[in-house]
Length: 285
Image (spheres, one colour):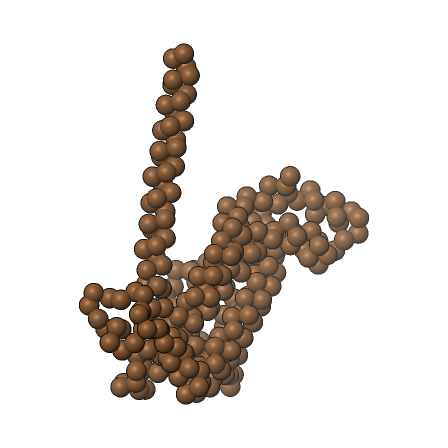
């Protein structure tokens, strides 16, 4: 009888702890979504409600004039397309580069391998402002300034993605590769037909992280792009504020909504893959 009471108490304690944790997570999620909700409401609010105190989060007379102005009077559609192009190219290209580099550092033996990998990791510790000047000079020297390749090419090397995939590849048993080599597979076939299929969780994790970073990036486009039709969306919104000081603020809120909502939806759809990729241990089952 006492044992049943003790089990019931433990079960009730676990339920209470899970309930408290769930409530805290929901409140934390709402707190993080609060700025997004505020931006969305201001993008469709009237002028009188937009700056009212206390703030109005559910406009009584919603209007979409800001979105119409954003896509008809401004080159925002082209800038949004530029953002998509840059994001897709960087995510695909940097993922391939990270896979190749990570496999080389994890499996291949060559002089100075560990020292070279340590030098590459230093890139995680150096502020981007330090490397901006040499990268700017290099882009200018290659004739890529004020073009999308100026933003895409330097971003193809993502040190964090290289580090994560290298650590993951090292957890994969070498016996599998040795068995494939005995069957006649070369390094290329081993990588793309064995290692990569076994590493999709980690690859998805680095791809999702890179997507969020590149989609919201402002620093590098601001350094390399100056023509409005070649800017990314984040840079275009800041340029709109700087160029038209007296311009209505509603299009800025509309642009922020267009940029932020896809990121929230993207993370909600792929959060399981991201969590699985980060926690994946690479154990062969």
